[in-house]
Each structure stands twice: as structure tokens, then as C-alpha cells.
Image (tube, rainbow, N blue to C red; front, top):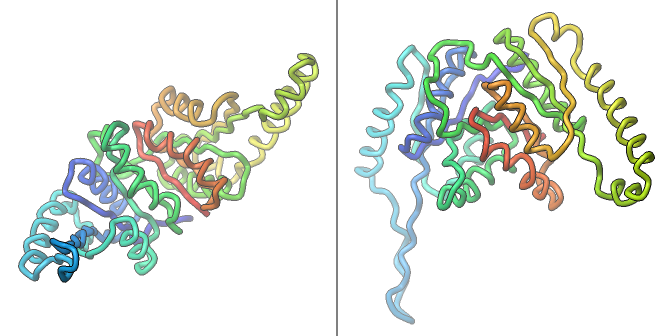
Length: 302
């Protein structure tokens, strides 16, 4: 079984990070975990006031600033820690995404829990500048909690309807392993979804022959349906309810549609690494799911 023993939860004292911390605490109760609550204090550079003037050292937090911040963090975390969840509060100066990733490696964290800031205006910029970097570069799973999640139960199981999107790649198989483990722990309903998208090259090549295109899609549909049936071991089916589903269309749109229809509590999806092509995939699928989903999204890069 996969377990989350060390959870890292960065906060910025917003309602978004409050949602994230509540989810982290609920998971910690279920897995008997510890939580490291992290606040990243930015180092503010002070530029020279005139050409040739000496530059001043960056403005850093004083001991008094750190004491006040720590007291605020402890108060912020107190509500979520009710119920005996061990929490440690830390303040580290630096750039948010870099500090979060470095601290996750040092712990080492089994899970990072992040609150996302929504979908519009400045909130998109925030997601792009911090959360997106953490999602793409983290070596451990990341749970993104949207601001629309309300009424978190403070007792397990947290997730009872889980959707795992697979494309049969190594990273999606790893994501499925996590989804199956969580589903078995919580005796949840697990939907394994594969979205079939006819490659543009195939459409162009077969566009003049509708019968050939129908044969191509029918063959691909049958082959992927068979793979879906065998991707979940029988031993897993004995401990949770498993449903496999094949959809056709744009992956992010179909993942979000099934999530809404099934009122999923959790979406699990793999990320294809960090190369240029992978970043493009992240932007076109995973990023859209994280931004648009109304439930937490668990992403895994490896």
C-alpha cells in the first residue's frame, strides 16, 4: 500500500491555503502522518537609488518578524490540527516554487498539498508562477486543492469517488497505482478513464475515405477497451468498486465532464516529465484539469 507519511503544505494565509491545509490534515488523520506547514518569505531586493550609487543588501526578515510570522502560522494551523495531527511550522526565505521543491526533497515529502487560486486574471498568473512549476518539477505527488471545495470532513475516508485518467504511459500507470491504493484504503468507487483522441495525422490521411476512418477508430476503440479491462488487477477489484470507461474527444474536456457527472472527490493524473513536448502536454491537459476541476487533483510526474 502507498502511504503519505510526510506531508508538506505551503501556506500564504489565504483562504486557498486554508482549504489546502484542511485537506492535508484530513489525509494526515487517515494515514497517521505528520505535516510540515511552510511559509516562504520573499527576499525583497533594494536597488540603488541613482547610477553609480552603492546597492544595498536585500531586505530580509528580522528575528522579530520571524517570531511574529511563526505565531501567526501556529494560529492559522491550530484549527486544522484539532484532532491530534502533528504539525511543524517553518519559515524559509527565498523564491516560493524553488523553496517548496527544495524542502520537499529534504524532508523527503511523500505529498505536497497546494491551494490553487482559481482561473482568472491575476489568479492565472499565480498558478503559472508557483503551482505550475511545483506540479511540473516535483519528484513527489502534488495534491492541488481548488477554492471551490467546501465542507471538508475531518474524519476518513476523505475520497469516496475517485477518477483516474490513463493514457497507458508509464506515468499514468504510476498514477493509477496511487489511485488504486487510495481507493482500497477508503473502500471507494474508482473510475479508470481513457480518452481516445484520433491523431490529426490519421484524420488527414483518412479524411477522403470515411469507411477506412471508421474502421481505424473502431479497431483503436476495441484495442483500448481491452487494455482498460486488464489494467486493474483482480486483487484490487476485491477491495473497492472499479469501473472502466472509454471516452472520445479532447482529453481535458472529457476528464472534466466525467468528473462533473460522477461528482468525483478526487482526480488522479500523471504528468509526462519536463521536456519541451511534456510542457506542451502539461499545458494542454493537466493544467486545464487542475485549473477547471472543482475537486482536488493529484498529479504525479514520474
